[in-house]
Image (cartoon, rainbow, N blue to C red):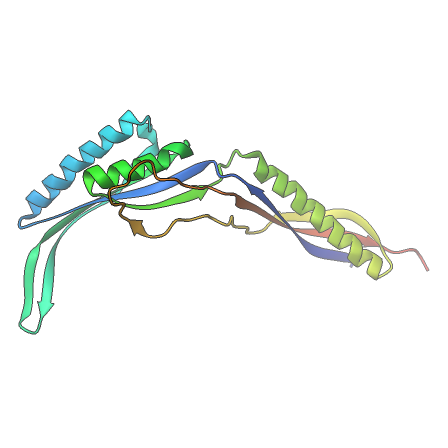
Length: 210
């Protein structure tokens, strides 16, 4: 069997995020399920109008869940119906970071919405992804070279290379939030996010003939 060395190479690059995802929830509680759903539907149309005015494309919006269910209050006397809750959740992808705070403020102030996020993301087309891949492969070669020198061998050509699982370090906001009577736009800081790459490479080892 030929002598080989198998190593992992890793790289991390910090870069400003390209996108942000908001999850906006509209909720209503009414005696009848139809009334609750009608309330949510009206406010959903108003939310769409806000997003239209701010230039958020329809392709960047997605309804992620609608629910209507009866709620109960539990006490020592048993349970009592307190009405029906209707919820509509919409995911909104935004590339203009300056508008994120404005969407949050207007949705919460005008529509009593709850907002989760922003969840920052790096686009698949971002050049940092390929740069991280190159640096991970270079890291693997450096590691293999060190191992080869340690056993008195020369590093031969790569025989096998495979990408291993690597996760970005997402910058997430907290859970659902409600913003009360803000005086102006909500300031947000995107900061930087890590793009990680990881590879596994097998190199041949070459020894001088004895």
